[in-house]
Image (cartoon, rainbow, N blue to C red):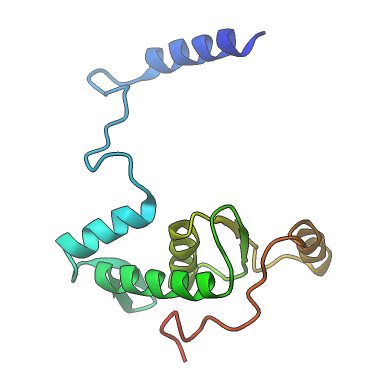
Length: 146
């Protein structure tokens, strides 16, 4: 089956199961902007609104935007730029989101590294990322942690 035939069949199947009245086209109220730009928009519009709530701590849109800009600046100062791969080895926490947004802000590629990777899995990934820029220093200060 050719890709065009496959896509036509897929679209027909989606149309059959789509609830009546549900739009099939994508609507971008802010235009086609990046995820960091969406965060920046909400930081301007609703700066004190909760963006992330984690273990009793609230990070507002203003804080999230500011922290991700700081980390992006730090990554840029370490030589990270558009198209570079950045491995992020963090558990599910606000710092993961901050790093994610910072990497995207630079146009780099976010490569999440599962924090429960076994040693062999981490070694394999490290070999795949060998040519990627490495940020050796801790970003704790840029992320607002001490």
